[in-house]
Image 1 (spheres, rainbow, N blue to C red):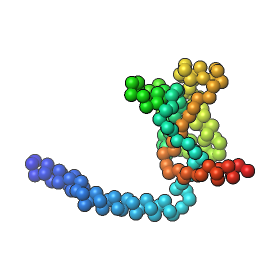
Image 2: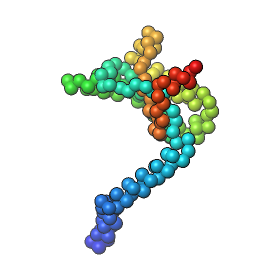
Image 3: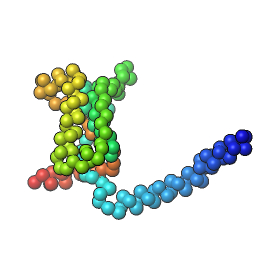
Image 4: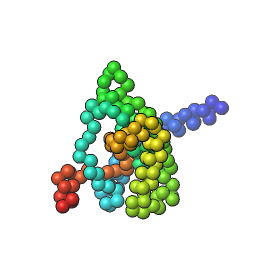
Length: 160
């Protein structure tokens, strides 16, 4: 039994040697470089032109769209104040992006997202207060795949 344990441990630890990890890293970098330069489908345009500054306060809607999951969260932000909790997740709902959803075309996919956001917001009284007062809820979105950043000036040119 000790022999088997040593053999298994050796096989696992062999992969953790610095030389092995560096070789793996080099192979990954080469593949990323090849794939990212090979075709336009690897990047989608992002029209975000501002980033959070850490001073945000209030209730925010957070969306994360991945290849297989949509996460919708309602969060309270208190900036970077040390005296308070800077982030509180009030509610989070996860929905599976299955083949039926992947097959949605055009605006139908975004309608599905809007439906999921509406379901989550209707379950939270503070979010309902925003809706009743017709106040917008600030929102952030993350796409869990590469996004190409588009300069603001070119976005304006596209609108003409």
